[in-house]
Image (cartoon, rainbow, N blue to C red; front, side):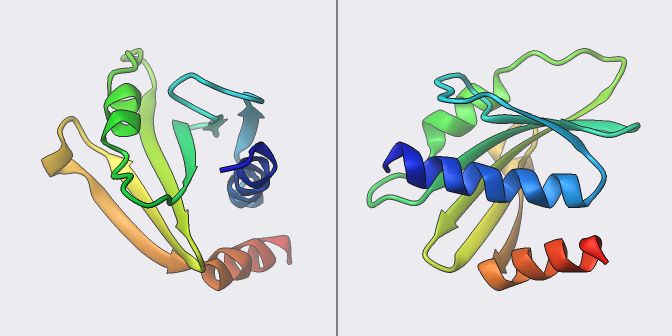
Length: 119
């Protein structure tokens, strides 16, 4: 994935969070476990943004993100956003892979959420 393509996807994900009243920080050129950190009054999200590539199941990305220690005083959510053509999977990571929860949507759904929240 070129960095420009990755940056565009990170900005799209960032816009979704900002449209939902989150404050977001982007870690440009991130080689760490999270590309974005988003928070509101109740929760902090550590977010990794990926575009699907052949033969990539994202286990290493999930493992790194799952391994980030989080403080107990705040609710933390670890999220992997994966874009494949016009489909998007948002995976909320649990303590183990068995606890993960996926939401599937299209790019159109993401754009509708953005427009809905801009009104």
